[in-house]
Length: 154
Image 1: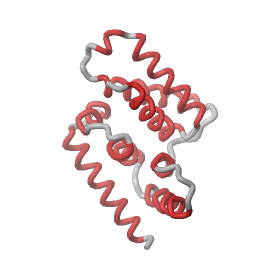
Image 2: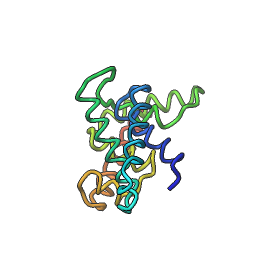
Image 3: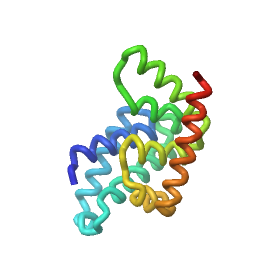
Image 4: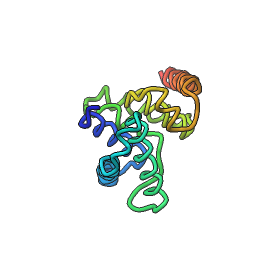
């Protein structure tokens, strides 16, 4: 497993959940510290699921504490999807932010994990306690709704 690549993806996931840069950095570091502190995690054969489970639980704890951060918003994907400040990207991010408002929080999370972080459907399914086929169906349904919302803006 490429820890550097996964570190960046876990950070994006934490930022998506928390919408606060410093909290996302702290949670990402804590995720990897917990993962590396427990050697039995390496033998479990599912490092991605374990990393995302740790990160998700730490994010939930942070949200419950309510410190420094807002609840997950629909624009988390738009901000993580691109960082180029040109006019076309700004317009696209704005439209995507508005379209994301049509999705439920769980759908936004699945789309983020599957599309932005490229997490395999089987891992997402184990993380969320659903089958990989349910992940495919929910992701396709969410993407269809996003396409419809984006086309309606044209």
